[in-house]
Length: 210
Image 1 (cartoon, helix red, strand yellow):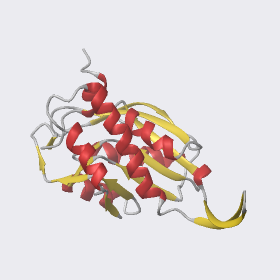
Image 2 (tube, helix red, strand yellow; image 1 turned 90 degrees about the vertical axis):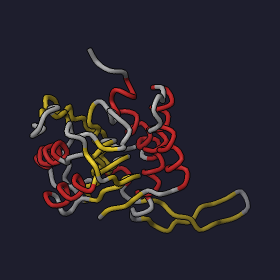
Image 3 (cartoon, one colour; image 1 turned 60 degrees about the horizontal axis):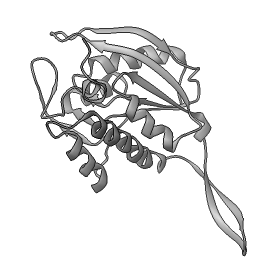
Image 4 (cartoon, helix red, strand yellow; image 1 turned 135 degrees about the vertical axis):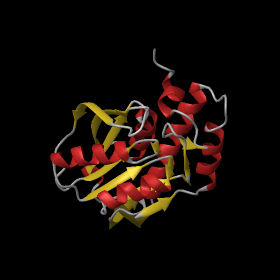
């Protein structure tokens, strides 16, 4: 399942954070907001119960979202930190997992993973957060590793910008996955960066490492 988050506010924020010269404070703030808005789209798909609530003047019908305590948010370091911040504002009761992963800059873009801290995922609703889905190689490796920690009820990927190639590769390897993204773009540079994209999300959020 593929969902493009085309809400006008999400698209306005995306426009701001991908502008050349955006500073780190503006970029992080925008990514936090996008995490929140993508989460609003996703939570609308979750099961709910009808409830009755007592008001100061009587009783009203309402709803309660089921399974919010079963959400596990997995952050792909370091670029996903502000995205996860926004997600956790909608799912404050969620558990968290962390994956340290990156890909080499030269083809075939081999993936390196040096850290994983993941809770048990059996029967859980898993949200994997990573701002960019480019070639799909890194995400496929991460998803394969994550599945060793249990069988989730739902497996969901939150991106800001994706590519046709990356989406196809991930769905081909993980057909049960649900992908939420704000933009789908067609071109990749020879270094594997999305064009026009927005650049390196980790560097934009936290500065370029030495």
